[in-house]
Every structure is written in structure tokens, then in C-alpha cells.
Amino acid sequence: MNFSDDPVYYIGLLSGTSADSIDAVVVEFSDDQTSDAQANIVATHSEAFSQDLRSEILELYEPGDNEIERLGIVDRQIGIAFAEATQVLLAKAQLKPDQIEAIGCHGQTIRHRPPSTQQDAFTLQLGDANIIAERTGIDVICDFRRRDMAVGGEGAPLAPAFHQHVFASQTHLRYVVNIGGISNISILKPRNNCVGFDVGPGNGLMDFWIQKNLNLPCDINGDWARSGTVIEPLLKVWLNHPYFKQPPPKSSGKEMFSREWLLNSLTDREDRPEDVQRTLLELTARTITDNFNYNNAEVFIAGGGAFNTFLMERLAEISPFKISTTADLGIDPAWVEGALFAWLAKRFLEGLPGNLPSVTGAKEERILGAFYPR
Picture 1: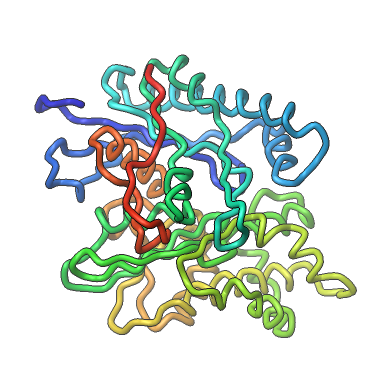
Picture 2: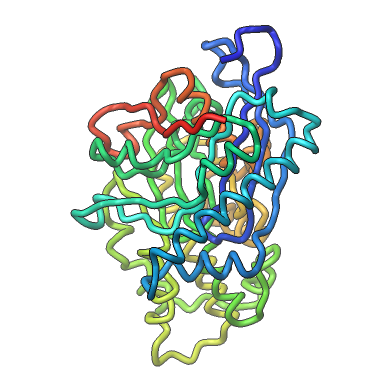
């Protein structure tokens, strides 16, 4: 740990469920133990995976032949890609490796099967931390989810603990919603009370559907969805998914709200593709706002969904509260999740827990992560 008056820097690294790019962020934290609420974004970098590597990752999402061989190769390749992204980030920040306390690397999730969905629960993230540490010359902390699961937790979402530290108000209830491939919500009550859970589909199914139909990576500003019409019978079927009625703690992923789930629900239907996209956007909006169960709350959106103009409009139309983004709380919505993993690395080095049992259902708090020295 850095005990001087110099700035204390951490790096957060991750790739989301869409596996489209690596997000890397340098975060400055105060070394004062009482100042966890201060997280300053110093530099950011986003770098797309090569098309070949992304294809290999997406194939690993589903059972297939020769999985162990392919997994080992992809694990190494992701580690190399993460290390290269870190080097670009350091150059942009004009920082040297020895100025970074540690990298918090979430890696790339290829399976998440929590205890709420099956007895033999496990979660698996790829990105060889040995390679990242060796090629960057920086200590790496990774594997944040499995210790929580070992003590009975869902292993997700991890974001609410960070949201509580940096976004909670002592006077107002706040909802912080991260809309990535999957959406998760943090309900931040005054006096450091917090609950949270995965809501359901975020951008992931919308991204898949536009890629399948228009060969575009995502629906920029939600313009394609805006051109369609909600298919009410289909939306009703989707909203009847048992996950939405399941009480927290709960977590989800592409295993539950998968491409196959979507395509099976469209069997024997002849809907216009843009109407399906519009209905998927409505599913995301409705499942988020259906969880706004308190009065006089403030709502802040983070993640890629914050940049979907039409989705933000729909949230504002059907929410009883004003919709803002985390930029109003001091962190650009694009980099909140990266800052989360930088913060988890900080917690690890300080010997402090990174999970919230009220969120994950773990029996106790635990220090999260595994350490890979430079």
C-alpha cells in the first residue's frame, strides 16, 4: 500500500457479457480509510476484441466440442488482450506501472450459474491474470465472484457494494441501475442500508437481435427500436418468466436470458424484426421500473443503456421518478463498472470485504479476489 501523500491509483479491467470490448480505467482513491466515497476517474480506454477472439468467446457461451482445449487458448488470448489494453491506458494516463497499486480484473464471464438457479452452482471468468501481471508489471487481483459463492452467495451483482460507497445519500433513497448485457439494480437507502439484484435482460438481447437482422453491433440511440411497435402478447409472455417473480437475492446472465430463449419464444411467429427490437427494449424498461417500489426516490442510470436515447426516454415516461445518469453523481456512466473493479482491488489490499450479504445472500462478508503479484 501507498502510505505517502502521492495519489493512489488503481486500474479496473473488464469485458461485459456482450464480449464486444475491453473497458479499462485508472481510478484515483484517497488513501484515507474514511474517504472511500471519493473515486476520481483519471483515464479511460476501450478496445474492441478482434473479431476472431470475440467469435471464440461467444462460442464458449454454449456447450460444444473440445471445450477444455478452446477454453485454455481463449483464456490466454484474453489475458494478452487485457495486458495490451492496460499498456495503452497507462500511456494515455502518462503513468508508469510502479505508480499503480494494483489492477482489479473481472475478466470475461463465460458461465454464471448461481445457487438460485441450480444446486451445483459455479461461475467462470476468463483472462489469465498471470499473463496480465507479467506483461504489465503490475499486481493483479481477479476472481472476485467465487469466494462469495463459496459462502452461499450468488456471486453477483457485485456493483451495489461499490454503489453504496460512492453514490449513497444520507437523506434520500436512491436507485442506481446498471444497464449492461444484463441489468442490475442497487437500492441505496439512507444510513448505509443497501439491497440489490440482477433485474433481467439489459442490452444483451437487443444487441443480438440487431446483429442477427442488420449485421450491426448495437442499436445506436435505440433508433431501430423506435421504428417498431410493441408486440403486447409477446411482451406479456416474456414478462411471465419466473425469474421476474423470484424474490432476491438473485442473479442472472446469458444462460437464462439466452439467444435460444429469445428465438424459441419467436417460433411460429412472423413479427417484423423492428417490432421485436421495440418489444425487447420495452422488456428492459418495464422490468427495471417495475422494481421502483419506494416513494420520493432518485434514479441514476449507468452502463451502456445510459447511451440508448430511446431507452432513456421510455424509462422517463414510465418511471414515477426523474431519470438521471451517474454523471450527475460524479462518475461517467460508461466507467462505473470499471471503477467497481478498481475499488474491489483496493478493498482486497486493505483486507476489507467486497461483498454485501444483503445483496448476494452470502452468509457473511468476505474479502473477494485472488492475488497475482507482478
